[in-house]
Length: 135
Image 1 (cartoon, rainbow, N blue to C red):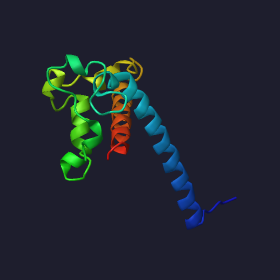
Image 2 (cartoon, helix red, strand yellow):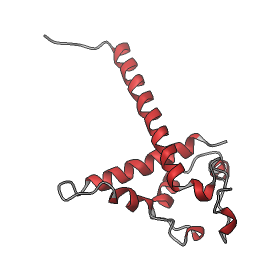
Image 3 (cartoon, rainbow, N blue to C red):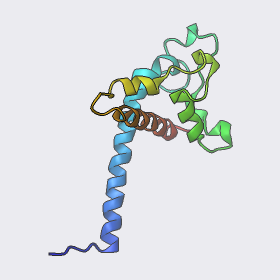
């Protein structure tokens, strides 16, 4: 038996799948933010976390990244800051290497690349969450 999908049905399936993935990424991104970033950047993502008073260089308001970049969220730049490819003085240059933290939790001898893939997925989820919070 051969099953064919009508274009409209296929589009509906893809839209539903994309919505589910986006919602999951937002949830994962929020959890990662709360676990790794909120202590400095604050629960409201505006740079007023519990450690903000102790920092020599203030944590930035992460809701204004797009505004500071002519209205376009700087996706690649944010990814590079989080994963350590671009340093940030406030974080001791580079920022705490969350990509390594995420990878260490997943890497194994049986699956050495799984850690890298998992780390990149988590960094992307975190960045997509930050993108969703832009004003």
